[in-house]
Each structure stands twice: as C-alpha cells, then as structure tokens.
Image (cartoon, rainbow, N blue to C red; front, side):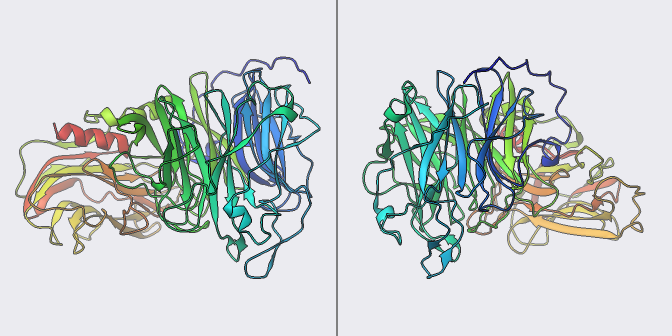
Length: 611
C-alpha cells in the first residue's frame, strides 16, 4: 500500500456566525444510517474518518464499516472506502488508532458467524445482531486509502458477564465506541460487554479495556499481544443499576487513567486507575471535581478528550434521563484541568457551555469526536442519519479552559449597569430595546441576560425583583415563587421562527408566554446571592447561574434549564426597568445585557462581585 502526499489543506474561509447550529456543519458522506464519525490525521496530512453506515436504519443487515478522507479540514470528503463490504454479515462501531509508523488500525464488531437472531431473556428472538460476534481489526498503510484484506480477531478474556449470558458465553455480546488511547507505550481500546438482551434491548452492561503492549511497534498483526482489563472477573459497573457502558478514557500527566461512562440513572460514572488500568477506584457518580456536585447526564455517549497542557474537554447533555430516547439536544461542553489529591491527579471540570444544538428539539446528536489541527478545533457528531464536522472558535474553548480563573465583569452588550449601593426600594432605569429572539438567515437569534445580587429577608413567593412589563403584562420580570425559587417570566410577540416580515405587533402572530425558575433549594434568606438569568436565542434556552453554578436540576428535577418556543420573537414592551419594586430585602449589582452571556462570563461576573 502506498500513495502520494495529499494536497495542502485549503485556507480557513471563516467560521459561520451560527456555528453552534448543527445545520451549519459540513456533512460526512454515508449510505443512509451514519454513526460514530471518528477522525485521525494521517501522516500525509489528510483526515481519515471512519463511520458505521447502512442503506437502512441502525442495526440493518446491510450495516458495515467504511472510511473516507478529507484534505480541507472536513469540508469535502472522498467517496466511501469500504473497510468491510455491505452486510450481512454486519460489521459495526468502528474506531481508529494511528501508530507512530503511520499505520492506521480500525477496530470494530464483526458478526462472523452471520447469526440472524439471538435469544432474549423474555423468550423472543432478537433480530438485531450488530452488538455481538467477534472484535476484530484491519489496518491501512497508505493513510486510509485501502485496507488489509485480512481481518484479525482480538482475543477477549471471558468474565462473569459473558458466562452469565443466555448462551453461557459461547456467543459474546458487546460493542465498542470512543477513541482508543496510547499510554506509556501501550494501546488501549474500549470494549462494552453486554449481559443479555431483553424487551428494551440491553439488560446489563459493563466496561473493559483491551491493552496491547506491542501494537505500536509490531508490524506482523498475528504477533500483536492483547490482555483484557481490569484484572479479575468483573468489569467497570455502575454503583446503581445494571447498565454501565460506552466507557471513554484519557491519561493524566502523572500516568493515572480516567474514565467516564453512561448509566441508566440521571448521572454518569467516573473512575481512576493508578496502575495502568489493572485496577480502578470504586466507580462513583461523576462530579465536577473532588468534593464537588454530581454531573447530570442521560443514557447517551459522554466522552472525554485530552487537549494537551493538562487540559481536557467533556461532551455530555447536562440533564437527567434513563432511556435511549431522552433528549440529546443541545450538546454541552465542559473544560477540565488537573488538580492534586492524596491519591494522585484528578480532573476538575468547568461549568458547561452549550456547544451544539438543532432547532428541532426532537433531533438527537451524539457519538462525537474532537480534532485539533493547525491551531483550529473541530467536533463531529451524528443524528444517526447525518454526520457532520463543526469548526469551533478557538476563543470559545480558551474561555472554557480559563473559566476556573475568570474574575472580570463582561462589558460587551451591557445596556443597564446599576452597581451602586444596595437598593431597598423601587428604582427605575432606562431600558434600551432588546434584540429579537428569532434567528435571521444564517445567524442565531438574539438574547439577553439579567444579572443581580440580592439579599432577601424571606424567600416567600410574590416578591418582584426586576420588572420590565407594561400594563398588560407584556415584557419580562424576575420574581420569587411559592416554591422558594427565583423565576423569569417572558411574555411577548410571536413571529416567524426565522426569516420573514415582522412588525413587532402582536396582531401579526399573537402572544407567547413562558416562565422558568432556578433549581429548588438554592434561594436563601439573610445572605447575598448572585444570579445570572440567560435567555439564549440560538438554542432557545433559559438558564440560571446561581453563585457561579449553572443549574442542572440536581436531584429535584430532570432539567435545570428550559427551551422556549422558536416563534417567541420579542419581549420588548416598555422602555424602563424597575429594580426591587416589591421585595423584602436588598438588591445591588444589577446588570442587563442585550445578548446571552456565556456561562463562563456569568461565572466571571460572580467571582468579580465576590472580590
């Protein structure tokens, strides 16, 4: 296998203004179904992307693994290159690893015995057969243009979950997602073993890692050695329930390994290994750092990537859920940095930001990858029918990575700035017009942010903290509720959700109304608290950042943020805002922005206020 070097990548034509909207991304080719678009940069400079595809739905008999190449940072792609021909037998869930020699290894499931159905625990025959069989690899020595004719099986040590399946381990149930890892001269490949299948598909799962100490140097694929980790008869499980799957793994600077994975609870799990994966800390629900609160995540892929210089990125969905069908839109991103603990290095995570979204709330994106190339940053994702590449501004990621030290007040878009002495009675201030929330073509809708510090004598409901409503109740207001929370209420004119004529008159389309409050249990009496309420007209979300923490629902509700109707066009109703018109307490540091602040900016404002 050989090939000429690829042409130099084309220059960056610019990142679109609506880069968070997945429709602005560049499409990776497929046959119909498209899953797991994972990328490596080959030694000839091209990107090689592997995907699992089919001319039907996920699990179709035609499912197989393919590759495609791009020489312009993912804008255009070569015709699909079959690593395996269209099934049956099915080949599925492929990932890539590049060795120092430039060889590319593709790892995937292969239904070698061409089983057409397997037994379920309820006696029904399961006809979907893409998560079983043999774990295999092929390789490419010409940067992904062609692939070895032979496929090679990876021996997997039998464990209790295999012996406990309905075939006693004679048929193996498993699949594979996530980027392989190179660590201290060895290769690590994830494997997610399945106990059995039932009416809701998988009834039990746990995680393992396949480690090779010579794959990076051995040219003869028949001589590559493999061992199944962790040691013992049990893989990585969940502290609650039988589902623990889709492990993602990175290495820390002290040689520790970190993994995170999904469950069928409202929370992902994490664990650390201090001995190269042989043993792991007891799996625990993932937190934002040692001693911090739990991370919220549904039953979907949640991946971690290392970005160099002790920096990490974490893709998740920032809400609870126990089934596959729960919302995966938008996708959120947190940035990590290393901290010291008595046991070794650990990762502390930032408050998250919305990374990508789709206007259609039903669209679900997942199975991402992260690519850093020539100082530019890219993410992939798939809706299962369309896989795309998205370039993300470097300053967005730098902001996230630096959030833990942010302590400056954001000034861009600041239209009301009342940071004087605390206010115990009503005060009126001019309120410039807020932007339309609906999105013009190829851009995102506008937004606004209301920020303030408050010290209440009582958390009773009915207190109005900020009021920008007219006599008919149109506009927005911030008040306390009978649930002991702070709530934002919006009432304004409906209009076209994107382009279209609109006068701002309610007679055009009528009125729309929505309210959302902070998480229960956060509002306190007798002490100063900082609130940032962010209305984001891109993904159409309302979120609360309270005392520097983004609300995620906690243990009290599935979501800590809400989406509002795309047709809510404007909440402009008055040219004045009243501060503290009806409260038992004091307010200060009131700011209103004519844009949606990033979470990181709200955290910086809170930290600046706490100086």
